[in-house]
Length: 82
Image (cartoon, rainbow, N blue to C red; front, top):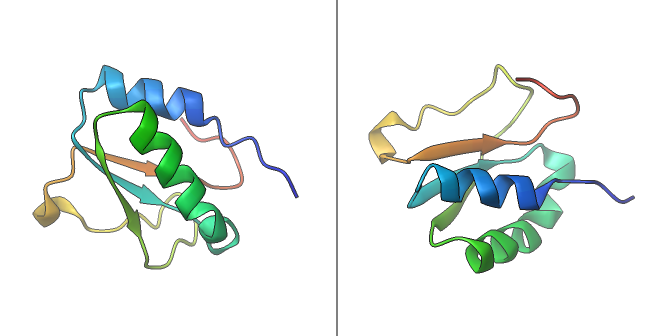
């Protein structure tokens, strides 16, 4: 199955925020694409990209990462949520 992960849009956001340390949170179904996502974002930005390996049960299930000093958290899910 192909997904439009809008990686160009994500890279633009990382660059516009000048984020240096980015956490990516993926639902289980997208975790097999983690390397592809990481490789793309590392190529298009100057950020260090980290994959959150924990669970992701929806938009309300964001990890408590305040103590890890990430500049940006990016989460993919099934529906658009602004």
